Image (spheres, rainbow, N blue to C red):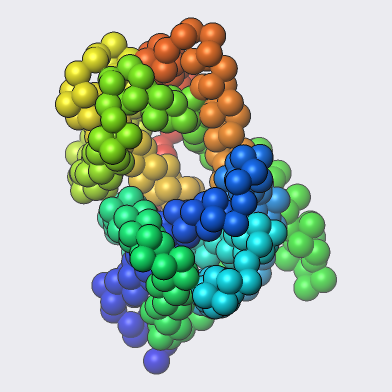
Length: 415
């Protein structure tokens, strides 16, 4: 059976289903690994280092993974990467059951899972234009955003913590099954999903002996010289950096500024999840009715206005509603940026461009978190950091509007 003979709806459902199981696995892993680390060591530096290590695979291998995805079958890449994750966490489950773990095992396993994640997540993203028509890109990106939110926010975290409380190996066993199902769903999708090289490529990068390094250099040059994509990468990086200033201080804001208990703080996670699902539901409609640049502006202004308002209110319910609205706005921005990337970037370059894009975004997150901590220490309250972050997001909205107002961000979405 060829790729073309498989209905578009079925192809998209298999991709979204695979992503949903993988995101469930990610959500469980992000809770289970820190809990396991605390069980095997009380060294705060080692425990904090595990959190920092989660950023490393994206920073070290994001661009390389993107270059490889422009050379191989992307569907097979997802299958292999999810299979690797299933095997690694399955082995961790066995070792935990045998009481044979150490903090270094936790580090190695987390890094292996994170490295495979760079391949699986990137390949899933760049597969979208191959499984849906241009007019369905925004809807497909919205569904993937919803799958991520449900898997990681609503299911993964609670499942990981509750099952760990029963016995420590349990969440890793479930995690292994989730990643395996993510692999199986795409393994049954027939057809080849290897990009055809040629369009948009230089002569050097299309030669049979072209090196991965040459591919990466070509991808970097393509991004730098594209009149729109380079600006969108800048907007994405600034959005990640400035919004993370506040998000990294959310726990202090809830406990100190709003006076919530640690148990009540969890409500913010659910509020953000609900808001994110709302954003995923309306993003495609906003694009159809308002256009791409207006949708981007509304989303960024929404992010800035909600954070600024959060810094000025003291009522927990109002703050929770505002955080939900922020989550909705940031998901709208993410859907728009992903759809723009899928329409502006040639398919054979999508992996490299996504690698550059995500390296910039993931590299901005720890910087933003550090700036947020310094700002809260300097200004005295987390609420003040939210005000500053909100104002900064409004500046990003202006920068984005000035940068792209004369360009179409999704020029072929309806073709």
